[in-house]
Length: 364
Ligand code: M6R
Image: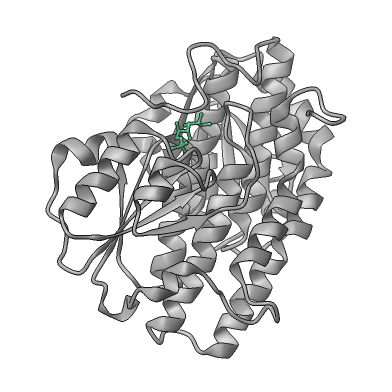
């Protein structure tokens, strides 16, 4: 049931504040002071490394989580694409944990990766939306993301629910490893509790993002740029856009543009810069200016401070709410989802059932 929405994708984008609130409620104690999940049974002090394996959007969610887990819990994280991991058969550290992240829990390559990790003696975690899935059954510990059924082929609420649950996992690991104390844990959970409200405020900016998306839909190609936590968001934005509009889009770490992609910049290609005013903003600002200097059209998604600094220079800008850097990915996810959705509407493509794609990829 799409409710009042034209497409499942629209419904699923709009549902995200309540999905995140529900997932958070399921992952923390009743008094909201502590993360409580089945992965607590693992002794994380003895774990040398966490390997996360996934495909597509789940892979990008894992890249966001890597920053959270490394920064908050100081645990080294390796991210792998399932189809590469399973055939490369890499050595895995003794006592290591391998987590497979999958909305459907049925993705063939992700399942094969899980089986490989198990055979290598790793403790395995399955972070899934579908709790009756094969990955949930076969993993040593199944962790639900509580996103509810996701029907649109382009994954939206599962992405943000994955990031939320992985962030909560990072907090639990940090506590177990003695990196944060009870007050530190509460502070992180308070931060995560702001996500539903900030996402709702971002969703309210839909008309502005729609106007930008319509302009972007007229181009043949688009580039998404970001640094740090915004780099996986740039990859996610490009994936969403190509999936449902069939436009050519690429996501890049902004520092990489000089190493090739800046050659693509001309007066017609929109360059979408994901630009919160965080510690990396100045670096990203110089990348935006490199694009502008080559007559590129920079569409900047930033917060008020970031947009103020670039005003008069960029082609277009959309101002999102201010947010802690660790929380910003949730807001920028909504923005890139709306860009893809409204560009697809402008182009008249099939939003929920894009050509050549299936919701769950059970063959390789
Ligand atoms: O069910 P999974 O999370 O394992 O699916 C992985 C990818 O197939 C999936 O995220 C795909 O990339 C989406 N269509 C992206 O929107």
